[in-house]
Length: 131
Image (cartoon, rainbow, N blue to C red; front, side, top):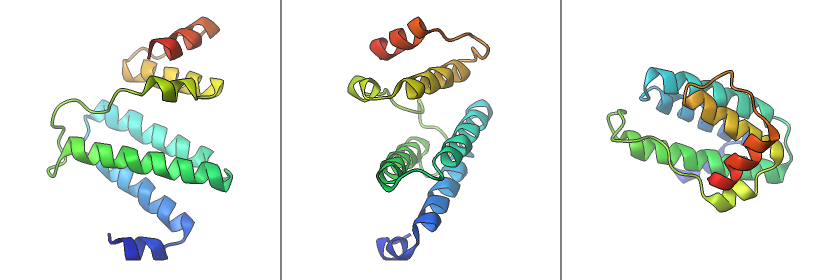
């Protein structure tokens, strides 16, 4: 879609377009990752429905970057060309709020198939330092 058309969209329309694009990209992922990713995307977009404009801009930028990364990793045919995802910059992890660190940790557990593990404060501090 051209920048001219995107610039004419309202903010809710841009959010919806990004959301649907991400879900479409997830179709090229392995089944387990797709289910995990789709659920996470739905939760995140719902969670940010009423965020302030500054948070909304950061949210949209980061999710657009994610969509771009997944597009590159899946290629034109929509099938993974190697590993999916990327390492998180340690300085970015340091900037996360405690609840975001817990959410990231829970996502890591789900991605590794370790659902049901308990999360302690030591786990959270340890996961943010080791990344």
